[in-house]
Length: 113
Length: 112
Image (cartoon, rainbow over all chains, first blue to last red; front, side, top):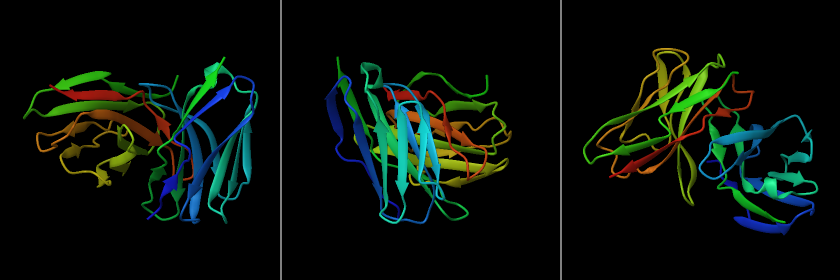
């Protein structure tokens, strides 16, 4: 059974810092990996999707990398801003006809002004 | 704009009552999903549907039911058999397995 782990559960950084959020998964037979952002009381917003054949994806100040062999993904946020404060979740889709997205519990990020 | 609409945003249920959460998408996606989110537990899959008139149980289907009569709609009924229904419910859709999921804004259900 696929398990997705995100450590630490919470992180507080000063504004302007570059930071890395980690995600690990136990089954390397993944189809893709997706990073989401969730603001309090809101739904999930997709940030980046990495297919299994890709190593990284970039969008603005965000860069996500994928290393299937080691079961790890990182989300890099450059020059963090208070508006980046949210919970960041990673989710993996494993191969197989009826596979479903499996989520980590998320990392709650607070960027201090 | 294309997206997923969940309604209502807040819902209150009395003991022994069934309630239905609405999920509608205009993205022309084939697959739709229902997740439950509890503090400290992450998202857990309740039901999913890959095609009209077909759906499958997820990891925590007991006490829930769904239907998929139209491609655009995937309503979730929380029955009185669900003993602890208070949670945040999220609906999602995807065009195909190879593509990303799009989520709605959620419904917060509270038992009163």
